[in-house]
Image (cartoon, rainbow, N blue to C red; front, side, top):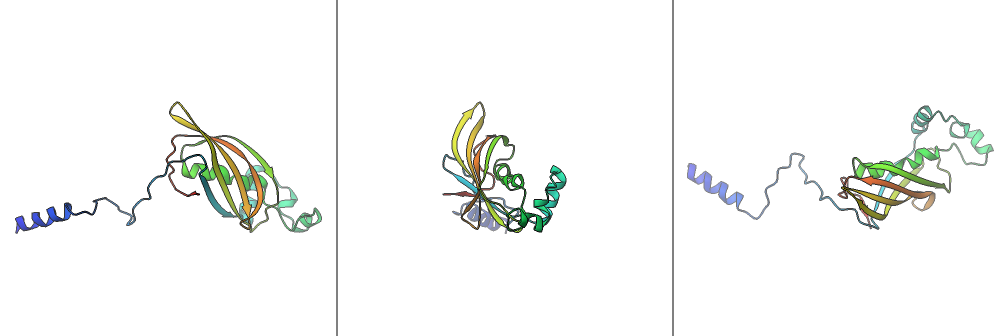
Length: 173
């Protein structure tokens, strides 16, 4: 009986299926290495709660963010999401893919307003990668779109990455 079990184990181990330990039930995705031209994206819908919490943290209580009538009288469709809250998508995208990244700089150009309830796609595209000691200095083109096509923010960012292997791979061609 013991030798039959050993033979069964040997046949299972020598089969062509690789043996991996996976406790979650799904195999982890392969890590992809960031290259110039790669784009990482995330989508976020900005809520009233987001605007309120950001206002508390930033002490920005401009009525454009809280009073619909005030915003309309100023020429907008409705209450605005803080521009810096929308731009916070950029470091979020980078840090979620490269834990330990250090955000060094960001330029921003606001092109169109974002309103509470808008779905915004933030994207960062690597335009230059330079190795410096054991880290990487990466320049990114940064953009946010609403309605899948309307540019609301663009700019550039620089971050220092601990490595180029993306954690949550969302690399888009």
